Image 1: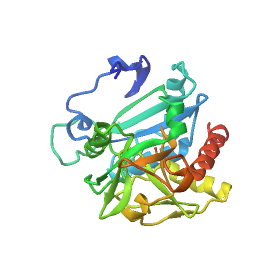
Image 2: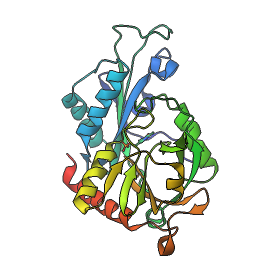
Image 3: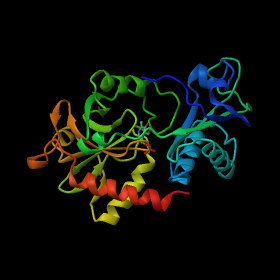
Image 4: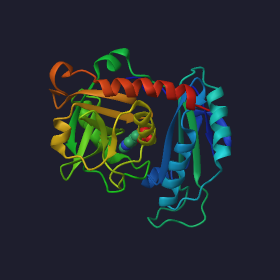
Length: 292
Ligand SMILES: Cc1ncc(COP(=O)(O)O)c(C=O)c1O
């Protein structure tokens, strides 16, 4: 694995400079407590995809943690555009992070401190054609994370532990269940297909409200595919016709093996299914039409 930092500029508290040289205080509450929020916004052809939806979620996450918005959407947009312009690749991922800021160590939220604001953009690490063509393997685990998965927090230790379960098994993601019901994966939302409809768990504090949830609702409507958010029992996942992951970096991705068993039925067993194929196609159209 390559651990070299990308040779790109970053934005930190009002200034631009090389990412590898940027420094924050060791007393930053992001470092001490994981007290911060973040976003990952995909960029296609140098244009930001669903930027407003990512900003809305960032604002929601900050409000839930009582971190005051450090700047306006227009200011974020200007910073993102400047970072994108400095990266050679046309397809990129913009990472934005706001922590509560620097203060003496105390769990209580200190009033009136300035948030630490950080952002950079780097070349997108696209999935291989092989992963697109064959789909990926996943494993399952109990969802042992905290009960505020709705906040896109930099406190990601639960997600890191969850992801490592699949990494150790050579799999792409860890699909999690709480009380025998589907929540999400370590860094993706999870969908199943049954009787031709796309089903995902309802919005709750156990699941991040992925920006792709509304996008998939729109794509299903466009394609005439049923769409429903409702509690999904573990055995419905195990016997689904298709399983699909969604995230900013994976777009939509077919899961073709779950816990070493092929997903699906009949001739399509273990292969990406027809609903995935239509959603992937729709997603590619949306990228062209909806990036700014
Ligand atoms: C835990 C978790 N759930 C879901 C998602 C998908 O969200 P989005 O579609 O906004 O990338 C992510 C994205 O990184 C995530 O980390």
